[in-house]
Length: 200
Image (cartoon, rainbow, N blue to C red; front, side):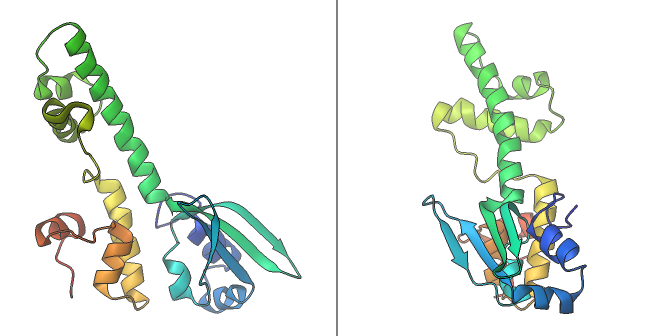
């Protein structure tokens, strides 16, 4: 499994399996690669894939189609988002759904919705995050926002990916924005997510 997502992602299949983890072999394989990313517009887009630096931006993305033949080389089609973001979003959505069920049950029974009690009554281990989700639902109901809630496992993968991009020559600011999607993060948020501020 890939060091960037814990899944058999693009890095794992193209670099570690297809390229045997050998930089020279990967560079040879790159000459035969046409890399496509599925866009938010519902179409596939051919992306630059001339160097290892180019493709590193897509390491934790899952392949949904990979075709190889001698005439055309590799045609690889990737998902629209990294597996890191997909899996974290799914995990967070499950937690939100459980809290919302508890909240709706309280409303039906005309009982007070207590975020702390909600967090303690649900089976999830991460009581702190549950309570944060419950607090936001108590304040904003169905309009509550949760995009800034992140979890240690996926932040670990993002940090590893960030370090790889920086090692390959990306500026820290560019690598951070790509891996953490933190274009407007404050220094406080950078420290929380990356463990330090981003060098500018």
